[in-house]
Length: 244
Image (cartoon, rainbow, N blue to C red):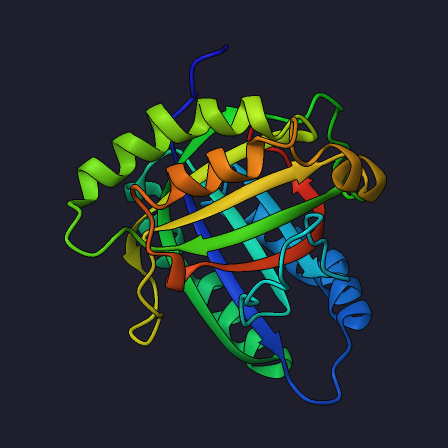
């Protein structure tokens, strides 16, 4: 198994909802024509940029309907360091982007995270085109009383290899450990996980390795995660600039 490729990349993750009367199709068009080009041409620009939007939920066989993450979409912005993100936030463009957001968005919450890539989907990413398959975005917090460093160590070193074994349909797995909220009212969360799947048929048929997998995964999650905190959203994605 290849080693995780973190904690070398800082990422800003924003979850958002659109104003009433604004459609995701129109926002995607505006993002492609106006927002993404300006972000990537800025004097201080992210090293990577993507837009995700909610689609029909993908629910593992036998699972109850998950509690949804309360957003319609996400943007992800990669930076080489937290210092670079700070410089980006100080540019004149940042205010212009905020004003553009006021036109489109009802609300948003954001987090600065450390990205840990355990493995990525094998297919190439073409800037500006729909990424093959879909992702589950999972928000979660650590078990009450568990130190943050112990939570991260367990999730990275114990659970990730178990997930790779027992979720054979998962073609990409990224853990984003929250370092700080980017808005004062952002709800508390410890990790935002990305689980990438090739298609819904593969997801339904091969989400678990065998009949023993659900119990094994559930028992392991109970060791480190607050189950009441888990929220999930199924998304599709366009990457406008790949960070790798």
